[in-house]
Image 1 (tube, rainbow, N blue to C red):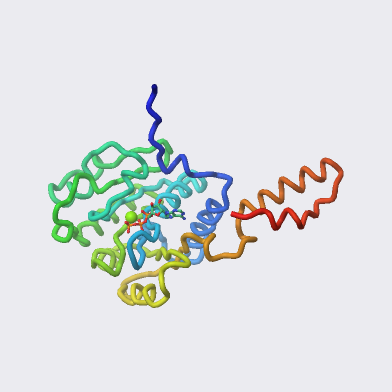
Image 2: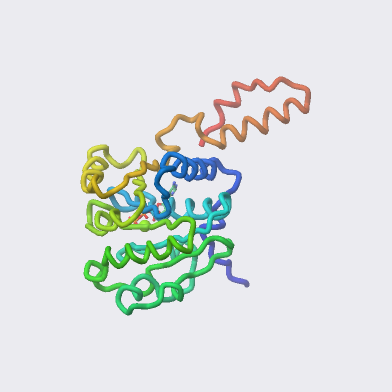
Length: 253
Ligand SMILES: Nc1ncnc2c1ncn2[C@@H]1O[C@H](COP(=O)(O)OP(=O)(O)OP(=O)(O)O)[C@@H](O)[C@H]1O
Ligand SMILES: [Mg+2]
C-alpha cells in the first residue's frame, strides 16, 4: 500500500479563507502606514512559547509571495525550537547554524519552495549551544544582505520572556510583530514582553492575535457566513425567502 504523502503547511493554506484576507490586510497596513520607512525585514515574536509565531510567519510569507507577488524569504532564527523546516517539510541541509558556526555561504543554504517567489532559510543542523551560537550582529548583517535580494524578509524568532535572542535581534530588523494567543496569554504577560523591547531601537509594528475564533463572537466565524451565503443562494434559487433565523442558531463551530 502506498504511504500517504506528508502534509506541508502549503496544503493547509486556503485561498478562500478569511485568514488569508487578514494576512493581506496586515501586509497592506504595514506597507501603507509605514510609508516613510521602507519596511522590508519583519521579526515575529511573542511573550511565551507556542503562541503561533511560526505558523503566522509561514502564512504571512505564503500570502506575501502568492497574493502580493512579493519576493519573500522566511528566515528561521529559532535555534532552540526550529519548526519552519518541519512546516514546509524541507530536506535537511545547512542553514543559520552553519552560517554562524562555519561561515557557510547563505546563498547555498536557501531552500526553494513550490511557490515561485517564496524561499526559506532554515536553522540547518541541530544546534547544541544556541545561546553561544546566536549572534544578533551577524544575523543582522545577514538580514540586511537578504533585503537586497528580497522584497520582504520574515524572521521567525524565539519568544521574548524565556530568552534574550528576540530582544537583541529586534533592533536589527525594520519592525516587530507581536503574536498573541488570544484568550490565553494574559495582558500583564504581553505588557512585560513589550517592555523588554527597547522602544528607542525597536519598531513595534503591532500585534497579531492568533486563535481568534476563541475570543470573537460567533458571527465573525467565516463558516457561519459561508453557510449563510450558500444557504441563501440556494433558497433564492428555489424562490424561497433567504431569511433563516432557525438555521442560524444551529450553525456552530
Ligand atoms: N490558529 C491556530 N489554530 C490552530 N492551531 C494553531 C494555530 N496557530 C498555531 N497552532 C498550532 O499551535 C502549535 C504552536 O504553533 P507554532 O509552532 O506556530 O507556535 P510558536 O509560537 O512558533 O511556538 P514556539 O514557541 O515553539 O516556537 C502548533 O502545533 C500549531 O500547529
Ligand atoms: Mg516557533
